[in-house]
Image (cartoon, rainbow, N blue to C red; front, side, top):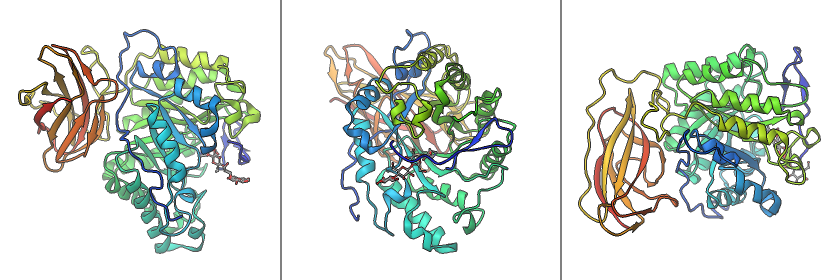
Length: 487
Ligand code: G3I
C-alpha cells in the first residue's frame, strides 16, 4: 500500500487519534463459493504455529488486507498463504473502484483479490459499500433522494456480484464523528435513516453474508464515539434493522494506545447480539504488549470472531514509517508476531457454533438474534438420508427466537473409502442459511445442496464427518434431509 495516508489528528485527550479517514461486470468470474467457515474450534489441540492455525483453535480467523499490487509480490503472497485465512481488499471493493460511473460496475480488481484469496483457502471480507470517502465521482453531483437512490443501487449492484461469496461486508464505514454524533457527509444529508436503509438493502441483496458496521476510535468504551455507535447498534437490534457485526478498526498508531477497557467494549457490543471483529489492526512500532493485549481482549470474548491487520509487512502499511505490522520489510516475523501467536494459543473462549468439544456448550446464538433461546428446545428432530454410499443425519445443536444451529453427520457405512459427498437439505419457508462451515452450499433457502469442503471430502469406511450451519427464520423446524450421495 504505497499510498498517501490521511493525516492523523490527536484527540484532546491525547489517548486516541483521529484517522481520516468500465462497464465490465464480472470481467473475472467469481467462481468459487467462500461461505465455508474454516474455523472449527478445538482448544485441546496442539498450539498453532501460524497465525491462522492459532486463531482457528478457538474458531477464530486471522486476516490481512491487501491491495491489488500485492498480487505480483511473491514475498507478500508467501506470508499471506502461510499465515492468514481471511482477506480484505484495501481499496478494490470500495465504491469508487466498483462503480466508477453511474450504473457501470467493474469488479476486475476486486475479483482478482477474491480469486487469489479463495484459491488459497481464505475467506474474504468485503470492504466497503457506503462511506463518506472514496465515493464514485458522480456521487458528488448528487444529493437528497438521488444520492440515496445511487447508494442503494450501488449496494445492490456490488452485492449481486458477490452474492454468496463473502463472509462479511462492511456495509457502512466510519459514519460517526468523534463526539458521538453522526459524521457530517453527503450521505448523512440524505436523512438520518441512510445507515439503516443501507443495511436493509444489503440484507435483501445477499441474505447469506454477515453485515457489519465498521469504524475507528470505537475501542475505548467510555469514548463518546464508541457510545454513539453502540447506541445505534442497540437501536437497530431493538427495531429489527438487520445487522450482524461491528468492526473495530483498531488503529493504535501515532501515540494512541490500547485502552484498558477494550475487552469491555467488545463484550458490550457482543451483548447486543452482534459479532465483533478487529478489522484493520496496526500499532505504532508494533508494541508487543499492545498487540498481545488487543489479541487477548478478542480471545476473551466469545463473539469476537477474528482479527485482521491492515497489511502484512511494514512495507505494506499505509503508515509504513510507523512500522506498525507483524512482519518487517524483509518478511521476518517481529516480536509482536510471537506475542499475538501466544495470545491466540492461550485463548479460553471459542466462537459460538464452532466448538468440536461436546463439553463446550454453545450458549450464545452466533448470528444476529438478540433474544434468549426458548426454555424448552424442540426435541432433537433427526432424519436420515436415503441409503447409498453415505448417509446424512441431522442434529439440532441450538435454537433461539428466529433461528437455529444445525449439524449434519455424513457417515460412510460402507467398506470402501468415499471421496466426495453431497447432501440435499430442504429448508422450511422463511428459513435461510446465514453461515455454513465444513461444507460448501449451493443456495441458502428452499432446496439447498451442500457438498464437501476441500479438506473433508475423504471419509473412510465406517467413518464420518460433520458440517454445521446457522439458519435464520422460524425456530424448531428441522430441515428435511435428502439423499447423501458420493461423490
Ligand atoms: O491509485 C492511485 C494512483 O494512481 C495515484 O498515483 C496515487 C497518487 O496519490 O494515488 C493512488 O490512490 C491512492 C489509493 O490509496 C491507492 O493506493 C489514494 O491516493 C489514497 O488516498 C488511497 O488511500 C487509501 C485510504 O484508505 C483512502 O481513504 C489507503 O490505501 C487505504 O489503506 C485506506 O484504508 C482505510 C480503510 O478503507 C478505512 N479505515 C482506514 C484505512 C486507512 O486509512
